[in-house]
Image 1 (spheres, rainbow, N blue to C red):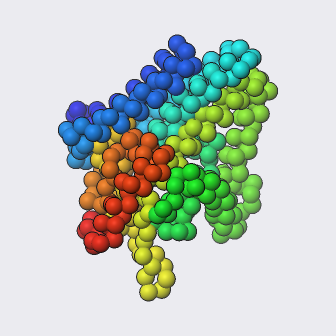
Image 2 (cartoon, one colour):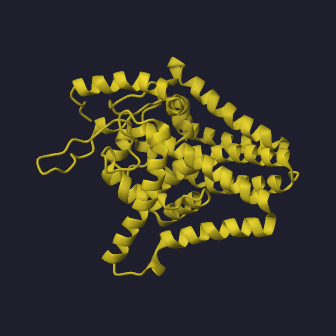
Length: 347
């Protein structure tokens, strides 16, 4: 294994560091998460770190980097419950539990959901099962239906709830994508069951959602309100990060309709890309997004940095920019205007 391949182990520093910080203080967990994301965002401004190495193939090591996150994340979440229930039953205790949830939710969102997304594209049953577990741990199991059967079919069209429209702020996008993705997942699952002549008793989506509800009930019944509050906050933070990345990835990009009215095939110009070294190392090359959509089964170790639309900085920095619509629009509108004036690059 070369140093180029070993760089993906950097991702383990986030859950391990957050766990150590959480043991010290719930507030330290949140501070560690913010500090880590700030460090990654700052690294995106360093010219030498703005390009990732070329793909060197996908090995068992790359798969291990993803699978190992399951015990790391579940262990971190269990630790969070233990710390949460130890907090005093007052306003200060509630604030500490929220801070703890935000810190641990930053891990389950930035990496847990990202790795679940990658594993869900695998053809291995074990990988997909781990993806379902990771998504269920943040109460977002319907992603496992909507993303693969919905978003990948409709991305960069107005039919896709996870594609942000030009001029739409993050804060207007969030309610639309949250409600639209939930509804779409159930419609897609109902269609699949009809196609295979199956009943809802055979639906993994329904089973997963019921398990999610059961977990919440058990947390409240066995460990009390603070355990429930922690779990809901960490899940909400994780989903916020996911949907903010969704907002960034296809903002303002549209596939043109062909003569029959159907959207043109997904091309290099239909996703925003970045190739910053540290961000890619900690999120499994997620920023090489055009190649991912054009070759959905290609594992992250083989993704190419294509000359598609380029973000002003990496995903970590764009999380901050997108949260302030004035900043986001000021940077993205000129890029969209240039894209409209030039033909899309060849893959």
